[in-house]
Length: 248
Image (cartoon, rainbow, N blue to C red; front, side, top):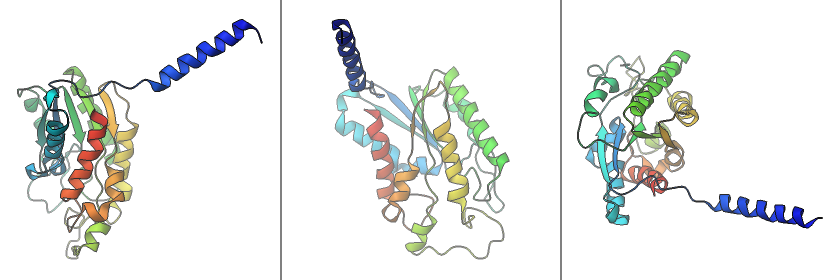
């Protein structure tokens, strides 16, 4: 083996080692403003994962002065669907998105978490999945025009098994699927399809994709009580922990 060949191998190894050891720049920088948009799981009764994330930032990196904004709204969808028996039409994200984007301060990053209500707790269909995907792209196009980075989050699971184990009594009086009487395979056949769409989406506005569905489902016995839709305090901490590790 010639000296030139040896030198080339050494240089190549050096480049490989350097590239493998390179750490990505942190998403959160000084004075970063993060708006968290989603349905009631994001809203969290003002005691959910958004508030946990703010506390984590304040405690861990107070010098960065990171601000979290809670833009969650109960019952909201991106599909513009409402099931029979729901108390009024479900809110539709795009009815308020333009107004949100005029608020001050303007966020540097928006986290996106929709899906639980978007299938209105019924059966899967290709039309439903196409609508979800198209509205997701519409949202991302809007953020790109606004020069706002996006962190996509999968929807959380519909944890029927965990809730039933904690004494939930499923409705037997409803003859249509709804939030009170969801399709028994809604998580497997609808929510997890939304999850796949999120994780497979590539768009220039997206800087990170985070799966919160898997850790919540893996710890569902601790993350849910009688409500299969909304996590308990432990569940919200699981969401916040999952997001936090990607931000710094």
